[in-house]
Amino acid sequence: MTWLHFVLLSLASFRLTHLIVFDNITSFLRRPFHEEVTETEEDGTTSTYIVVKGTGIRKWFGELLSCYWCTGIWCTTALYALWWIWPKGVEPLVIILAIAGCAAIIETIVLKLSDS
Image (cartoon, rainbow, N blue to C red):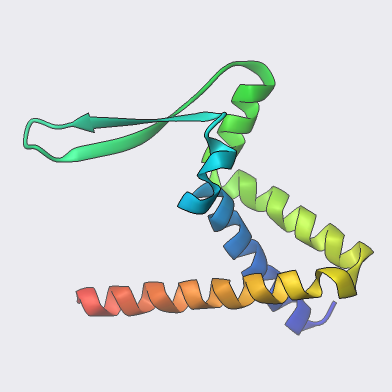
């Protein structure tokens, strides 16, 4: 594996993990395993948190999908396995995810700098 492949897979794994764990577009994947609960505080602010549903395998998947680190291991494993088995076929996906991951990092930096 070259350094370029390592960097591309790292950025792609970052973006895929974030997509699965946090993004609204994939909430349908989390919905069978999570319940979002919103509570209103005395000062009027609201807090939203996740309650994992079920028991057994359903709870296991719910815990997995609520943990960025856990999901990241599985996303990385899947991307690397696909890259190893079918590098030319998965290359466009990895490149798209890597570019999106890089853009997300840049956007985070820009937002942090604008808040200062």
